[in-house]
Image (tube, rainbow, N blue to C red; front, top):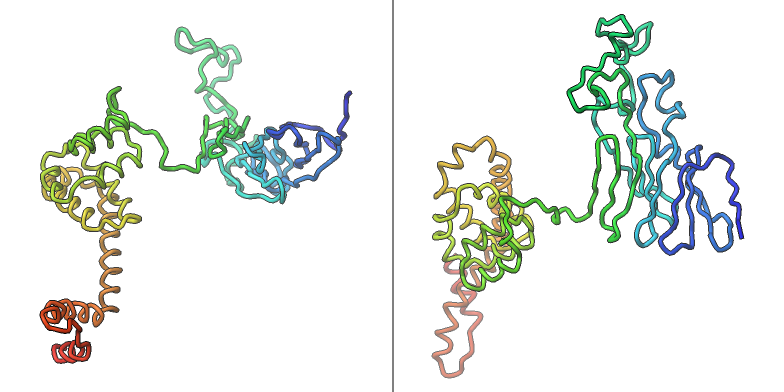
Length: 372
């Protein structure tokens, strides 16, 4: 059985929902149409013409708002659970829509490269000449067609010299795909393969990694008390949850000893981790002890790399000042409560020595008032 699903304009891309019960199709007029596969009936549509509209090409005679170029989707993809639809096309934008409500959730710009055609919304009129846009004019001074087509490429290069292009490459997204987990998606664009993820801390960026550095081996080092090797290997593996686990397992009394033996090449990475950890962790004493010992022991290394470490040091300073202000504000507001608790701690042992064991609270308040 063949079912025909009629559209008013040419269809550019198709995508099935993972469960196979729905189909979406993009047309040349910039709309995304949804179809119920079982009934072969329309299930809604999205007007995405204005959402996907990109910048102005160098050869466009109209503004980006009035131009019809690039205002359609050439690639569509459902999320793993079928709740969202991702669309890209001959534009600098990739649009993410909610399937149920048919609204735009977010619009991603795949490139900020001004050398690509279609990135800018407005063009400089001084670059327009009688012969056309100045950037597209071949001004190399070669008039002979035979000389212009001479292949000056290196031996083994079959496609010629790509640097001698006259036309600017256009910004576009040829294909978009969701990851099976639904937490990432990728786009094949003019700038290359772009990967977007919700899990920023799961970026695998190892540093001097070898086969022996694994999360299990790092946990074994922590259990045996070899905190220095465990912390260094965790920084080499560069997985944030592993670094945090090792860092928080270090006893505060061993921080000074570990800081003296800590390799200088990993100081920047550890300081950067501490700066981020201070924003969410409550281990204030551990953070300050590590920062103090590292800056004291490796002060010469930090001074020689002061320019490179300036963003990390500024972040540390900002977080320390913020914590100092927060704690100071809490202490100022609870000054009398703290005094009362301290005074009470002195009277409790004296009351326990008595026969009845009761604390005379009136006397506690009176003594505290006399001290004030």
